[in-house]
Image 1 (tube, rainbow, N blue to C red):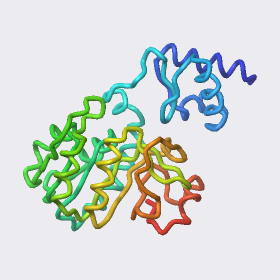
Image 2 (image 1 turned 135 degrees about the vertical axis):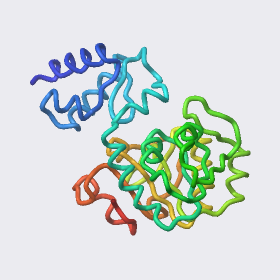
Image 3 (image 1 turned 30 degrees about the vertical axis):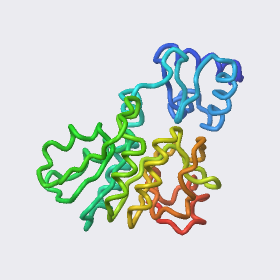
Length: 249
């Protein structure tokens, strides 16, 4: 298929649905995801669409709402959630921060689970109403409607009061050379504090966020303990991450 034909197909899909993932476009075009990424880069520079993590959206649909992001990659989020659930065993105090993957993770927590959950993620609260064995502590701060999280100085100060057994970090972007970065500085600052106050840090990331970079540096990969993705742990895509002394699930 000619490049121009691929461009035409991508733009038709975006026009019809307002969004499309790299994976779906690659399947429909019968080309690699890398080819789709390059095509979208060209179209984005022309202003014909907006490149986002995992795919592209119509210019009129930018930015994606929290609900739009929550609806993307549901199968991948379920895989990550099931892997992450096993890491709760034995934990008494747990940090969970923002991100739509955390919705799937918290939804997978057994109804009879018993531990202390500390979070700045307001979107999780409706999911926790039936978990009577959980002690839920909500960090205060400035409410960010686009991420449905509390952030800012107050959030960081409150987080510093606690010590967690494990911190589940929602990843914005992960690069095997640069490390973990965030697109919103306030979110990144909270991640730094939670990480410093936890014995173990587990990063949850779907494959679309791998080898991507945002502007605010959160940490080096060598400072986390575990990386959980929707890929099989032996997938070649993860080879760049094996040089670090971290667990890959």
